Length: 220
Image 1 (cartoon, rainbow, N blue to C red):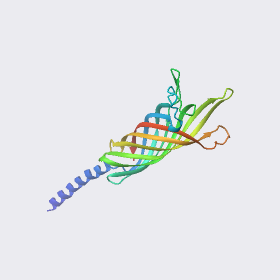
Image 2: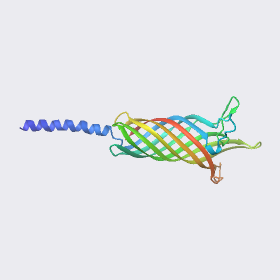
Image 3: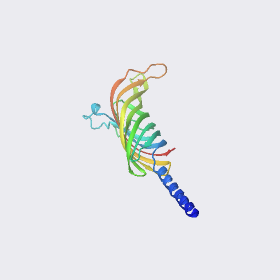
Image 4: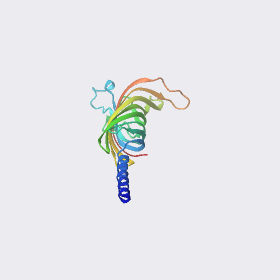
């Protein structure tokens, strides 16, 4: 009888260990960090679209890269989390066979982008999460201009909102990969002057941003 009880207890232990390991492997709960790369395109918004000039590209595109962090909680079939990102981009205005790329600001180069937001998703499979996201974004653009006598090189900080959707796939208990599309719109901006000059008053802008990004990360 004792041998039977020992065998049953041992068998229960072996069953519970794989069950616990499986539960841990499929959970999306915990803090995470990730490296982000992707394609970034900024365009003039609808209110400043130059539809009369077919030669004006009105968009700039480039390589986007950065880091992200967040915390998720797994409720079983649904996952809710908060997240933050710091990214940069190589997109800038240029001239192509005499055709100017301009997005309403002049000659610009994209700078750092700060994002704070949240996401909610559901499990399409035990290790696959499909999610929606949204939040606040602050993007910087370096504007280069010349009035004929003085050259100005100033930063414009733009405030806006972002929405997006993506898929996250667990690669192991702690590692994961993501593929995501996000759209951002910026409607307010201010000029950051150099040295001791204060920032300008906020003014209206209209700028659209589209990004397709991939990331790999680690959940603690």
